[in-house]
Length: 255
Image 1: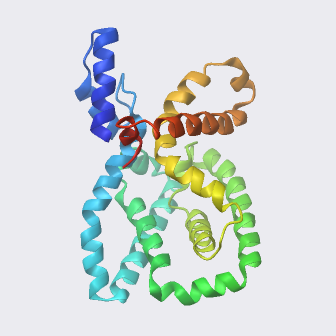
Image 2: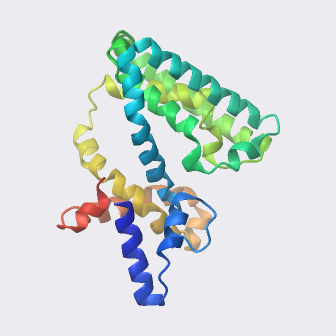
């Protein structure tokens, strides 16, 4: 899928601009900061590919015993927390200068946390959360509000305005675990809406940067940037839903 998008865009560029920049687009899809690249957000797919290559090792480790999986999760959590602490000690550049695709400790952390929640050993905790569903939902919302306040403060302290600066923060990890557990133990009342949106999420991710690029030039969104998010989501959702109904084309929006 990744190569399909890069090849098609490069061919279109060759026809329109008489410039075939396939190799540049590949580099730009892996690393940020590459000039004249349009797929910078594709770093996520390269990171996912790396994680899928690592997955068999994690599966082997889990088969050796759950305690090894748990120990690895704890170790990775500690590494992430140390890295988050380093941002406040003048070492922001260490993480900032590391391309997102290679921030493996962070991606491993959330991969392991997701696996931990889905593991049978976590079932008692999930049952406890299910029993106190309302309490944990309120706690999750409260922590999220705290996180927003913290993030606004944090970007002034470390001088890094992007959300990725907080991925290794304990608040983000805790909110993620609670949220994933709540979703794993509940039956959403808006299940039909959820099932309608989920198949389109990958396509929405692929298209969103292009749509933002076009709409971001409109003066209205400079005045009300918050409105850009829902509008981009709706436009991308519509485009993806149409594309998914077209044979062959639909393969560009599926993993």
